[in-house]
Amino acid sequence: MVRIVPVASGKGGVGKTVLAANLAVALARLGRATVLVDLDLGASNLHTCLGIKSSSLGLGALAWRQERRFDSLVMETPVPRLHFVPGDGLLPGTANLDHAIKTKILKGVASLTADFAVLDLGAGSAHNVVDFFLASPRGLLVARPETTSVLNAYSFLKTAVWRLLFRALPKGGPERTRLAEFASRRLEGSGSSFLALADELAREFPAAAAALAQLRAFVPRVVLNQGRSQADVELGGRIRAIAARNLGLGVEYAAFLPDDPAVPHSVAEREPVVLTRPGAPFSRAVADLAARLAAEGPESPPHLALDEEDLESLAAAALAAGDGFAEGS
Ligand SMILES: Nc1ncnc2c1ncn2[C@@H]1O[C@H](COP(=O)(O)OP(=O)(O)OP(=O)(O)O)[C@@H](O)[C@H]1O
Ligand SMILES: [Mg+2]
Image (cartoon, rainbow, N blue to C red; front, side, top):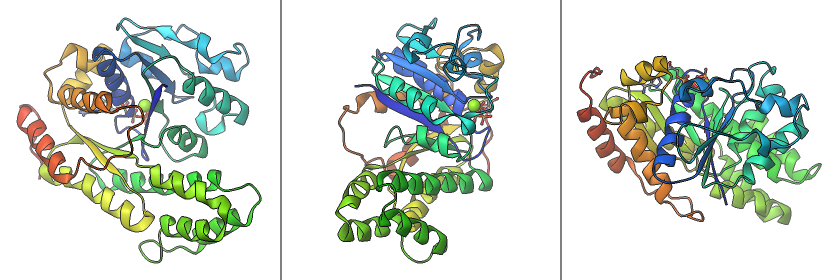
């Protein structure tokens, strides 16, 4: 079965597209058949990172009903084992996607014949974006080491947990009413977490047991991009701690990607940096993330093993490898 890797962020412009493109290339280079899907509908620009012209039909063709089958949108790329599904620059955005088309895309992605499907999502916490993120219990959430980006990442996680529970609880049932009451009452940082609520509901209503199980299996992976300093490294751990305390959510701090001038150079050249500059600190960190994803078995349980200590040594290596990018505060 294809492993879906959605790439989201609470705030725009933090490096989702660059990460999605380079991670997909790195997975393909590791021998994994990979499909990269441009789901940033309305603002699609993933093809430019791969140096592909956007002349083929993309997901807009499904929405405009010019094309009925998702799989006929899959195209080859110059990279062996990497395929691509173009998005659409003219649709009025993922947020406004029709429910039937969203379902068709989700089913199409899940039935791809590939090892990985990497989804580049639009920024923010619109329900449609969150629904694509929830296509996997282990999606990647990108943040930059700056206050607004970290706060938006936390908001994204909160919306995702709320949406996951809402979708997993029976339609029209008392469980959903309780969730809505809980969300409106809840004060940040005080009271109980969503996990505590799910626990309580599962004890009271047999139908809520599935929602609790899904919440427990949901362990998103935070990626800090454009990090410059040791203080930046530590932010990832803080997101993790706050998500655990306030939401009852397990979060894996999956990668620290350094700020690297090779990235904008490659973007300007319309080439994936992992191909053109494999030795650059960013490329090495992405290749490392790809290797870790590729090494996980398809059924592997959510693992929280990569703790701050492991991550700090990875980050220290990334920082040490980079000459040419600033050591921040
Ligand atoms: N690690 C990095 N080092 C230096 N520059 C970077 C790094 N990551 C991303 N950038 C730069 O940041 C810019 C934004 O990246 P990108 O387009 O991938 O963000 P995005 O999250 O997809 O944005 P949007 O929300 O608009 O889709 C790019 O021009 C890229 O060159
Ligand atoms: Mg983007």
